[in-house]
Amino acid sequence: EESKTSSSIPPVNSDAATAKQPFLPHLAPVEGSMAARDSFGIYKIDHAVGNVHNLQEAYSRIKTFTGFHEFAEFTTEDVGTVESGLNSVVLASDTEVVLLPLNEPTEGRRKSQIQTYLEQNEGPGLQHLALKTKDIFTTVRKMRQAQ
Image 1: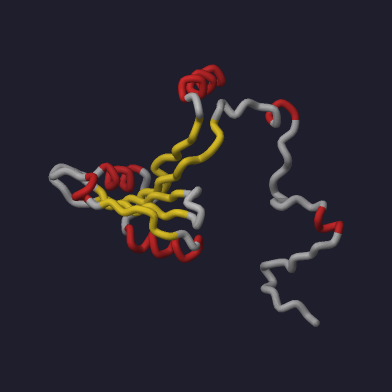
Image 2: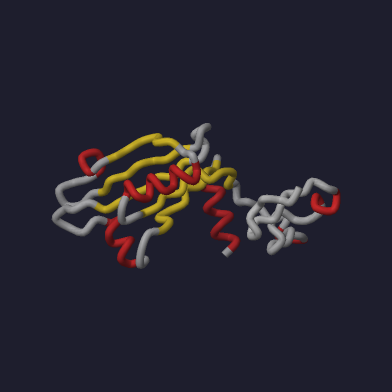
């Protein structure tokens, strides 16, 4: 029977020849000194925060393709002032190991830091990546020494 897969998506084969092919063929394994490089004590990405123009639109789109659920929600009343604020929702994986907070700007007397980000970066994107380490002082020292 002929495969009904899309021409842009190759069928999955489980034979020995296919098993030896790399998962991402455009990448190569890291060898030598880079492979043994110190991770500076960083052992996990805690969360990745995205800034967006429209929170509901981004939330719905990301929730649809990840299957993540709402973990927490914050509004200007929770984290803002009369000067500036933001609305935020945190999406989480089923195990709640992967957290993706999303922020949108709100109106205030001054421009929201989220609005400033969106303007300076010409649109939505990653605001920050939070990394976990058991010893922040050692991690920072090693990072500085590596520069």
